[in-house]
Length: 430
Image (tube, rainbow, N blue to C red; front, top):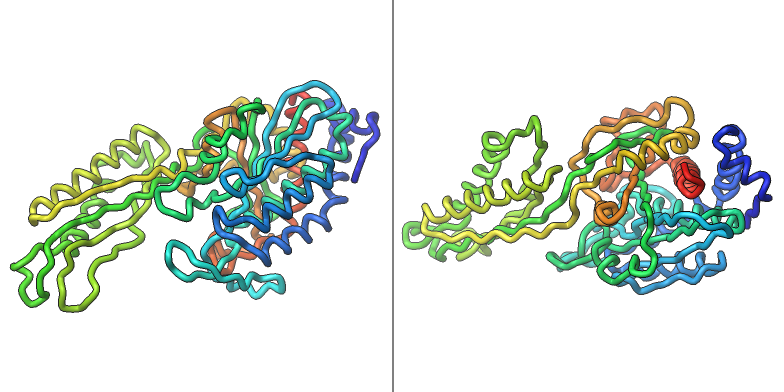
């Protein structure tokens, strides 16, 4: 466990001594790099789906206990939380890492590739850390160890939040992830003054950090549309009401909502159907068809407007054919927005960690993150850590969620250093 002497830590945190500041936290982070890599590879071999992260939670809790902390476990239901109290008074900050893997069969060929199989919403699946949450957990474990080694000199308190089910609940419509952890009271007795999070990201090169002030990741809604017709033999469609035809009409009509009814130059919107189910046999028109999809928006009012338009479109197409349509929408995450003042305050720390020219402004993305639930409670800062090797084309590199996603492990070092620098800067007044 690293314990820098007070004089060194003071130099590391003094705004007028930037080289010393970089040397202190950076040295602590780099000394931990072999451990962080080992943790990440172990977690990668043993991925777990949302709300099933029992082994991962055990690894995290054991590590926090070894640092002299008293973790709370079983939150939401597999989350882990611990608080580190510094030796000096100061502000409170929460650091969050998500732990869950995806229902993806790994195809990287890595020596520590996952071979885990499981079941997701009734379907047999492979399980893989295809989004990089194994890296997030390992990074935060490293940050926790570095900060624990500095606890006597720290000003304030740090909460480490290891969150389950960021990728959504294992059961459609179920409350999970960040929302469930807050509902179960993780901030009841410890309400932070700010919350930080990060995500490894294939659309940046290794060595780069990405930030953006204000809204930069979309809200995510999961919608389910049930169209009820009337079963009949396929040779006599006029004797029933075909819900599959109505589903096709609604699918095309939904795209006209975005193309013709929403000003997407001002408000980017994505409305996607990812699944259509209906029928069991080639010559039977079924009673019902179900469509499932996602809606991504950056503005709450635009979100409500598009939902209303989708419902109206579905109901009118259905009514024209003698069918009925019922739309249900489950909000998985609001839009993620970086607090501009917090970003401005901590930008120098991120720049020191990344080096000159490596802190880049990213565009708005229509991906989503339930870190936003935390950041809607207190000021939040969320940043990306590049994972595509230098020289590899970003446009063709396997994206997060790909079975071929194999992030450059140098991102672990930068992730630890960036989170550590930002945390120390916040605790010391920025």
